[in-house]
Length: 215
Image (tube, rainbow, N blue to C red; front, side):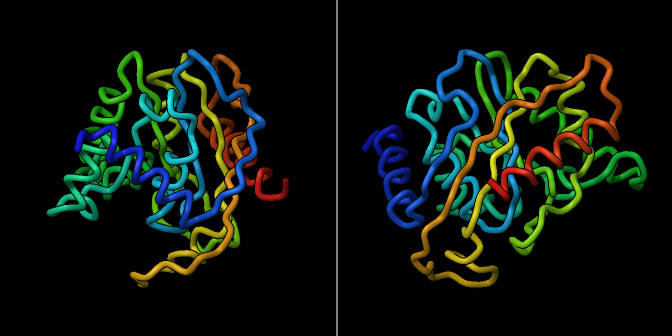
């Protein structure tokens, strides 16, 4: 079976399992590259978000995921060959380069290089700027990596995506999913100034994502 067929089957299975209702405030079809940034509460997050994208967008969208979780056996084969995931070191992805130790700073720099290279000039990415899974009740503070990604590629649209109930379908530490209706809301792209500061960017990005949880 070809990888596109496997990808299509997994996307269909994820939609069947999570039963997501999808709302697009952002335009669906666009020729612009995008960073879809979402809240993170479950290992299902990127799979479900990826699965609800229109096929023409899904083919060009790559999730960024923690290498330590997806690096072994069948999980790595699926992540790399089906999702075309960008695997980065968890420490580098979640570190705040403003106050991290030298080793963390170097890990964060390498992770950013991998992410920017994967974005290229045609792909979009799915990222989780909280850096780790939350409890589903609130959106945690963002790590600064999303700001530095915008500094590298200000031409790319940054689109907030709010995910609801995926932590209830596959709670942390559980292996068997529980059927619960989920929700995915694609918000409008961030409206940013040319010289946005780090604090201003992170405040705007966090507020845009948090607001979608009340839509």
